[in-house]
Length: 72
Image (tube, rainbow, N blue to C red; front, top):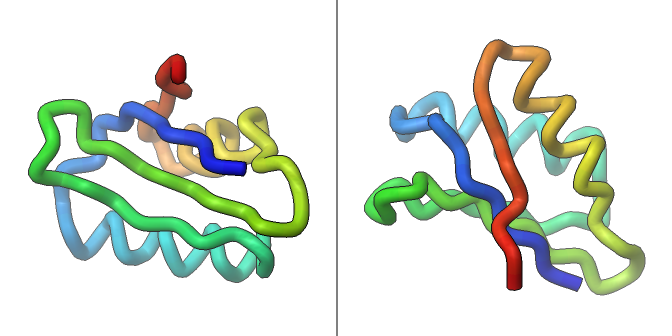
């Protein structure tokens, strides 16, 4: 399962901190950012379970940032 999110995260250091936080909280997720994309894409993949959309949006919102899942 892969989910793709539009974010307002533009800083590479901050993006790496979010990736670390996602991996710490969800050990079976593989996360990466594409900050070159105009939507500052966060892509999360899981081979074992469905990716919890609400969990990711909430995790990012806790730090004052925005994430919205993009349709397929």
